[in-house]
Length: 521
Image (cartoon, rainbow, N blue to C red):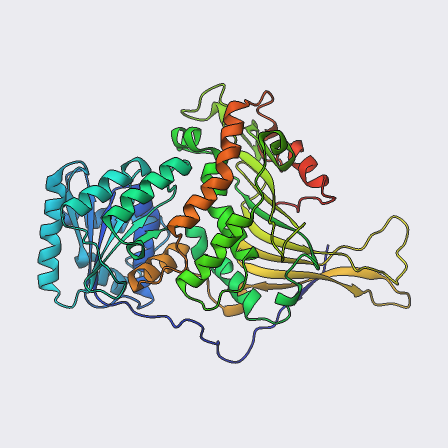
């Protein structure tokens, strides 16, 4: 086992890059308030922000859904959802007492103009009761198929006014969940609807991966430490691996996954977003458009491939029966509401090349799959071997390359592997890990991604949200592959057992570049 050197925690205070801020009073409207996203992610995030003291005294949350219920019932459901999500409304009674009376509910269908009239009336009442309210946030926690119509109705009803400048008050902003379209054409169409209804600065396309501490820390690691940026290029880095592995299968999301597959579900958004942060040039400032400008440049620099070349750069897989943690599990084709002859990929591995000055010739390997050995998300930067090794290496042994690993989940942190001399009379080398863990280092658990992103949206900070040209550029990259795979049906599915590290073709893909995948888990 590789020894670990625990990174010491600094004893001074933190250097403030972006001070935590308390937002001004506002009203949040959640369309789809009875859904899974609201219960499992949004309400726990709002509740925890209250625990942290980041809510003003004056705010309100309106839940909108088609099921008839009164405010008291809605509040009871949110209390139960918080408890199920691991929060403790009773143990944190002060936070719950702050949140509970500010929750209200409206029943209505999204295709009914009366729903938007009711929302408008409620907003007028709340604005009157809370004169300090500075803006309204509309969260579309609804199926993607309803985004366009809901935005159009919000605009035509007058509930969502178009604002010219970000500083204009009262502000109005809309959060749109992924997936933003299901291909380039639909993404452009949705962008057209959104831009007709509102200005770009009002649109917040959310990707929860960008709210994770370690993903944000990638920017600090690169641009606040002079030891890294000089070697962050083709001269020193051999390759990069970005992995998102899941133990779970599709669970109850069979119909959605049959439509999406792993490329739409993970690559077009999460993985390509992480790649852009890893590969982008230093922005001039840590402001939304400066950061997003550099991310878009990376996406435009990714090399495209003809259909005849694609098998050299991308492989797919689908899990069959196997075992997870010693327990037998079924294959994808046996999952609920999945076609028994489905050819939907549940795993993909890709090799990307970025044709620019910094990264020319450095492969970026991205992989994601379901029913893999462990739940893991990490970014691994493998450096090149020294050009000349003066130390004798015993026959049958080799020297491991230096690797910098950013763990995104389950335990967020950073590890650096390097070689040291083994104590003794001879000269023997061994790799060690210098490991930093967020929870151990700062004595606290990190915040959930939705907390960061919700707060940023209310504050009007779009740095960690996706711009329209980003969304379209990502679809331009994956669309040809999706179309190729849909036309060229696989004959060998399922091709990896649940609980394994993925299909053999993925190992062959990375082996062609003289590399091997890092162990999952």
